[in-house]
Length: 435
Image: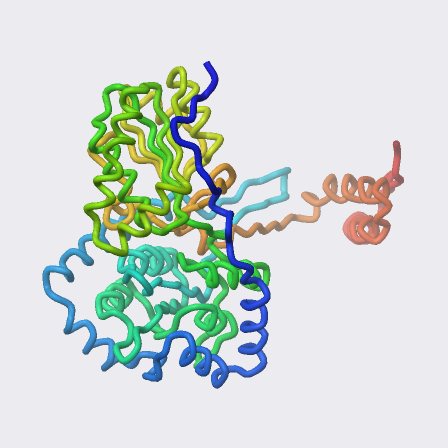
């Protein structure tokens, strides 16, 4: 049967997005031209904060002292999980070499970038976990310098828990600044910071647009949109758990899509009936976000069978994908497009967002169809090298010369010719192009 939409989104994640490109472009240009002073002016305007921007060791220590011990324990727990998983990821990348032809060697090296900038949201919510996810992976990757920045609150500064998390995870400098001005400061190397070679971490639409504009000049983790989540559930799923998980992700923001895909119409209707009461029970700000996200962006889709469910999921390529269905191994083998996968009701997106070790900086808006999330690999350049003996270069030089001439690249061909003439002066080679 064709897919049946019991609930269809009014908008997509891109609908109604503000035209922020010109604003962000102008701010970046102003800061690049004016340097520290202009960045400080923007921080005062947007962050409404006139305290010290680059935190001193004493300020970091004072902030850490304000964090309750239980919270410190939780942060250390999450940091340990993220660190160990990142170390596992790093172990999958090795320096290698092989003898391509007798006497001709080629290889690869993994080289971490020398400076990274980690953005940690601190507006509506203090994203402690984002400090853990971004700084820890950069540290494990081997980045030479790590700057963490987070929006300060007026008259208060950066949340102490964010400072503590960034500090224990390995940040070399902590910048009390948010928004476009923070992205600019890390990219342009303001306030004595080294110029970041890669920018990572979630942020609002202005932060995302700043990263988009600067991409190419500096590396970025990804171009991110509103967070999104999809749940695949069959008749074995618990409707209350499914509904709770949908609401837990809808609270991210008014335009955060959540989708339920199922082959059980009764389950779908049960979940839809429970969601409004679960939203109503949230605190006010969370409730407002979840209500709008559910009303305008959520979808509930009924499919004929699990294969159609899987195909539907792959088309959506969700950032977060949860499976609450029988035969979890079948789903693990079948599904191909997602940022992070959560198998069974014993785990949930909230676990991955905060403490299990897998990273929560993930591709949104369908980007999971071609890329994964933040990992140690994002901070590492996979570069290649080659070397050869003179004899080893003989066949490669001849092939390179002939291919170059066939392409019309005479200069390339001559770079091979000159080596053959030098290394083998007594030999004659046929280096003409042939069709």
